[in-house]
Length: 382
Image 1 (cartoon, rainbow, N blue to C red):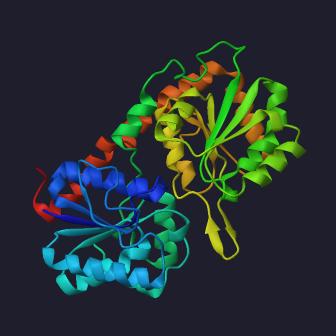
Image 2 (cartoon, rainbow, N blue to C red):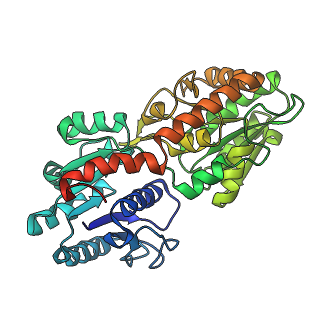
């Protein structure tokens, strides 16, 4: 059996690129590394970290344009005669290309649906493709419900395929370095709250946490808020921290390596990201799922997430963390104070979250799901 994965990108550290890499790796482990090809639309080169479980074909371009899209479609059509048994699109925008391959070569195809790009009504060509897809794979129940209700895709055609954290990064998160296990240190130690994500996305809720910080500091004076990620909203957030009088307690770390990111997760006491799901300027904003919540759970940390959107599926309320109203500054402050002041509760949630994440969101978990899904296309996995 051979599989072609059509992806917008696999070379960056963005959410869809990481999802594509984890999916391709799982497929390669099931059917053999030589049987999985990934065709990225964008990229800086011909490889993506020399993956062992799949092959990355040369990207079409470094930058997106209408011409590049047509070139990508032509390159994908050139792969058609190679007789792939299955095509997997990791972005709905590429589904019409897979639909055309299906029309010409009768190749079955799947399409994954992620976050905000999957919530509004799709363009006509995407709806045409999804109706012909064998399976539509949303990354959360929230996205599945949105796709079904807004675009009329039958629920029976959909299978939720959660994000999987790659083995190498999961190993870094789980590894103990003396800081793992929230609440394990003395009460006098500085407490660290952590958020991870693009800082250009205002819906992430960094501003809400900064506004909540004065109340948190009254309860737990030795607290620092660490924000990891790049983006153009940092200046606004720094001004807000100054206005709130908490600038000395907020640190913008910027972009970091996977090794350093894992160390940040392991060193924190609480992970917090009260993302808002909202319609803004004619488009949707919010978390389709939120892999960072799972990454924090794998590091054994309690997680504070939002009641709305797909993020609510990444946290088991009062078991692995707390779900809050993302618009409530007082609610975020109370949740943070509760976990920071109760290290035993935080540690218990962290341990439960780590067990749950290992069972549900790691590479072995996604391989088990994919093995069942691949059965009809190859008569069972070797």
